[in-house]
Figure 1 (cartoon, rainbow, N blue to C red):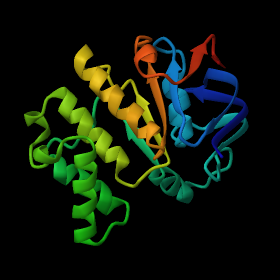
Figure 2: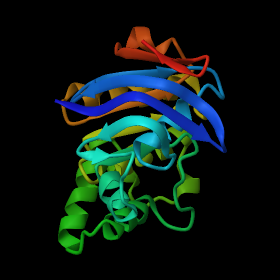
Figure 3: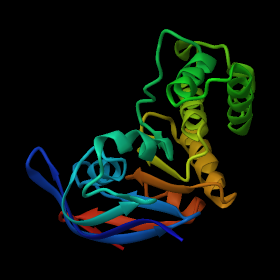
Figure 4: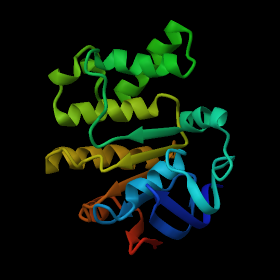
Amino acid sequence: MDIIEYKGVEILRNEHVALTDVGFTVATGEFIYLLGRVGSGKTSLLKSLYAEVPIATGSARVFDYDLTCIRSRDIPYLRRRIGIVFQDFQLLPDRTAYANLDFVLQATGWSDKGEREARIDSVLRRVGMATKAFKMPHQLSGGEQQRIVIARALLNEPGLILADEPTGNLDPATGEHIMADLHSIAAEGNATVVVATHNHGFIRQFPGRVLRCERKMLLE
């Protein structure tokens, strides 16, 4: 089943064309690389998928949501089905890793404390960070912070994970471990994973489908 379907899409950023005539589909369980130089439209495309950047023309669907006419009140429900991994982590600096995850669960409607605790424990174990739950972000290395961010992205069991340059602030060895984590999530069939990167070396280590942003177009 296709969870993403774009046809003839134009994406604008600040009234400038970021990408034009975008057409692609993504099936459940795929691992996809989104390649391109800085400013090529990778981030704009990712943001369009979770309705942060509007679709100017064409047709665009993610899950069962029509992005060309999605209502403001429906956007939070779309985003609950998408996990996002940022390059700069975006963890709340004044609370522990555990509290960062608990904040997200409470914000997305998990009212039962026991269920929240079980879910947090599950995702932290999934990324090998169970022993770091009560560390503050500044007490964690860059790679450890990114693993917490991946755990955060997994909290609501999303069908789609979007990672925007997830290794950009990490050393090569740590970046390789993070890519291995993301690749295994897709391999397990739990989610489709789209990774925006300019590091072509990962493709040999962790095979996946390749899409390229070039000349304001999306090429395969």
